[in-house]
Amino acid sequence: MIVSAFASGDKQALRPLLSRDVYESFARAIDQRRQAGETLDTNFVGINKAEIAAADLTGKRANITVRFTSEQISSRRDKSGDMIEGDPKKIREISDVWTFERDVSSRDPNWTLVATGNPT
Image (cartoon, rainbow, N blue to C red; front, side):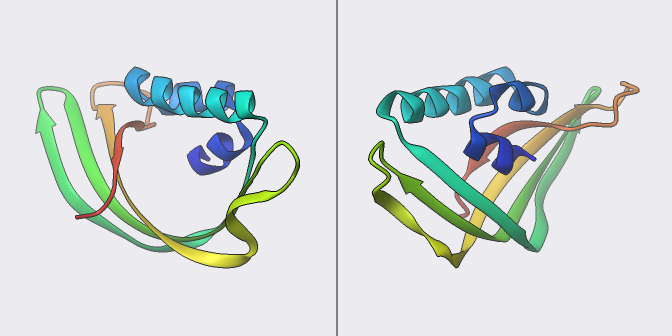
């Protein structure tokens, strides 16, 4: 959901899924893309691997860091429609590390993305 909403520039869909800091970072990137007249087309093929890298509980806040390896088709075009990056026909393997947080006392079962990074 997050990858697709970011690619389509759907800030409304992103808001409840991200912490304030992560949302602001994603929103800035979306706004910059729009101002430049660029488009991002991402097709999420699937997750090949998801490994828990870390987990901790501090008070009522649970954090879990997951190392994802996924397959995506992604391309970015400028305002003229010329390809800037990627290939709309090539599947790429993408590795990311995402950290999620949840208040374990909440009835809401959803986790919020609080940090993103590259695998080490």
